[in-house]
Length: 427
Image (cartoon, rainbow, N blue to C red; front, side):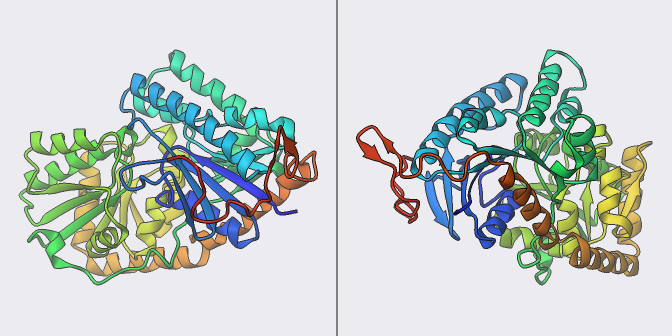
């Protein structure tokens, strides 16, 4: 039996979602037939591509929500498109398993109709959405309760859960009611072939002596407003020799750029937006210190941020707040700012590292070694495959039930009929 998998991700398109693309490539390398359904964005306008042996379908997306109403419209429209595309893919290609990658926690709704055909559902748990909602809005109203309900239903209809860390595994067991043997920790980890340091480019320091780098999403819970306060604090101390460069896109980017203007930090901080990997690597390789300003909250305390391991892969010392999973990932490769007097303490640790180059080098070596021996993506692949090996014996039918079965006057074609780059799926 050719094992067929459909991965649905709404948060980012592939191949730009590093975790999902790594999962897809790893499954393909282990003999799975992989299809990915994701949104389009400005970088990925094609409705279909055949990339590295993987079928990638992209549905339209109505922008990124940056308010409650905006998120609701975004998620509802995405859900409609996801269902229509999934039905098409089921008839054209077939699949035995749907892997839903949150956020949001509504992708299980796409999988439900296909369970009557024996299709199983794997929940790939990226974000704890109830905690994510609290980190954004800090209130437990009706919408918070809806997040709790959606998470509960997601767990209820999942056959296997893949958690990004031990904290999320505990949630799946305690809050989701899953048996421990049905929950697998598949950690975020960098691809060491991609995350390779390049020679520093002094021009990226904008004439300053030091560069502080950041990469990640631009939204409320990332704490970039705190980082701007840190940059202002450092400049008000008379330090004009440090530049901050923040790489990434997201719904908060425009507001953060406006904050830079309002705080008169245009000579100290720049936000690049989303940029190609070669530019990202050049900025991070040139950085003297890399930062993770994720604000202290329950969501960030239990979440693993891929940027931490990417910094470590590039041998960069890190400054972040003292949060459970961040400390587990970085260990001695990072300094940890206190949650009290956050801005001043975070700034002090950046400055201390800039003034101690030997310590920066030592911490960078520790981080690189930890990634090479424990945290690189290659160490997560075995757990990914184990999750799939667990879910396939649960299938109630031996093969895709519509394969070669007549539907009206036509016959569903063999699996390789649409395996090439000319798959006739509408853009």
